[in-house]
Image 1: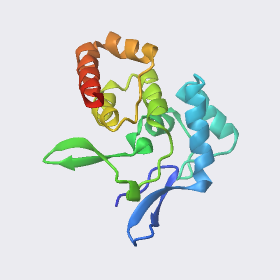
Image 2 (image 1 turned 120 degrees about the vertical axis):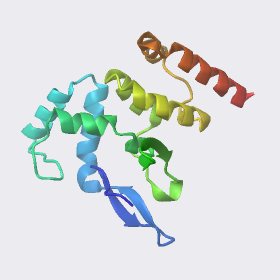
Image 3 (image 1 turned 90 degrees about the vertical axis):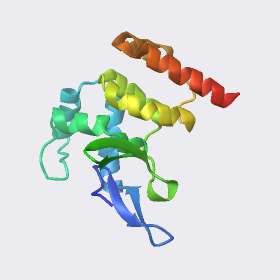
Image 4 (image 1 turned 60 degrees about the vertical axis):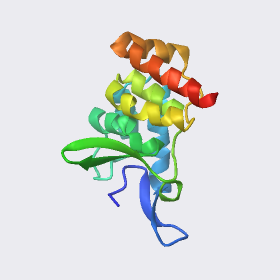
Length: 166
């Protein structure tokens, strides 16, 4: 099991296995980061606010735009981990007994759209739609994805999703 990202810790679950669990010491900061993003604040504004409140990263450093952006873009917070195999990186969904979710998928997708993080969205959306983590995409979110050239991709996902629901 890898090192837990900011806002998480590794715990032993009831079966003796390891599990990622929300770290109460960092969860308030993590919540602030996501809520400020959803309210339309930039990474610089979020970092400035956190630093004014005397918050620090795990490395005891002040927050900066890069540290805030890496948290907001990390698919770990909705239950995905990055795996590397044969020089290729791909996303893998955690099993329930390994992971305690922090944020719902739809809110995370909204954050990715605001950061134009479309490559990660291309990996996350098919799995999330199939698992029905995303009940529907907000029409403005869908419009933004389409404007970025993913129209055929999203339409394909929609067709597959509708076929699964029938």
